[in-house]
Amino acid sequence: MLTQLLGKRRNNRIHRAVIVTACIFAISACQSLGYYGHLAKGQWQIMSQRQPIDELIAADDTDPQLRAQLQDVQAMLKFAETDLQLASDGSYSSYVDLSRDHANWIVVAAPEFSLEAKTWCFPVVGCVPYRGYFSADKAEQQATELRDLGFDVRVFETGAYSTLGWFDDPVLSSMLAWERGVLAETLFHELAHQRLYRPNHADFNESFATAVGRYGARLWFAEDSEGLSRYEQYLSFDERYRQALQTLRQQWHAIYALAISEDEKRARRRLSLDHTIAQFDQDPLLAATAATWRLDPPNNADLALLATYYSVVARFEQLLALNDNDLLRFYQAAENIAAMDDAAIDAWIKQSGHKAAPAD
Image (cartoon, one colour):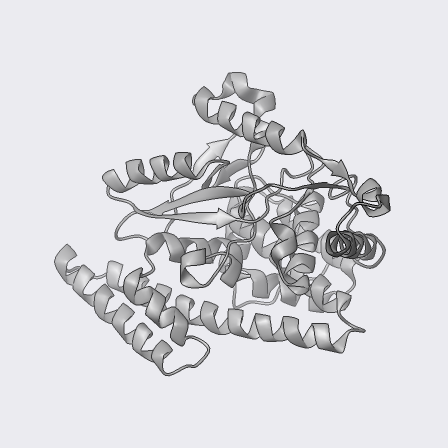
């Protein structure tokens, strides 16, 4: 959800990222050995602390609240396999107490007058519009270097990440701090990545997984009206916030396209932001966000990440509906799109106003 994607300082917390630890298998092809060494070390530190969830549940000295949360995770994973056709294949069968609030940190950057995120390319996973770290200090160091080059930059704190099935990802203590609906959506989101991932198309991958995660979470709460109500309220706020950001993104995109001076672009962008903040002041749900934005306004990096996670969620939701909410048919249709060449996928993504085709 977007409120998980745009930073704790703005009353929002990031959920997840794809961390490219899989690149350690192709490290000889990598130029930045220090960076991949950092990823390998961070991944090893987490994996070496794994505790089997079955053993934790059975142990007499396990905290009762933790036991109940882990049992809930197991029920979600069983539901994912039986009702969503998403096999965990060993992922989330273990638990790690991170002894910190965040799993990792990702750096997102965009030029001052562009909403296109800078990308980093890696073996196996292709190019992604962020760079992940297991250290806040290393992430901030990268962010400073990018700011010095003139980029708008944001460092996001993440509570979970996926290795796309290269490792058996554990349940992290940072994940158990979330509301149940957020946790369910995230687990289903990450398992969707393991089912379908198209290198070099982060917007396709994240939108697909977001659509699956949301649909799965709603199904999970189908017989829990109170839980479903809380989750829908959460999504309602997320949608209002996201729409406000999308409007801001459209306004800034139009400003950047104008044949005017850079100073004039900055002035118009500031007016657009001030207008949005004033609108937030009138909305009880967004008033706190307005106060945060006055101290720390969004920049191009924030709006670039918006496009990565949400650019075609509606298209995937439409694709699911056109396949009568039959998940196997939906997955096949999505796989057919993912099998197309890069230009064809880009064209499909840009056709946001057109009907998506059902599976064959």
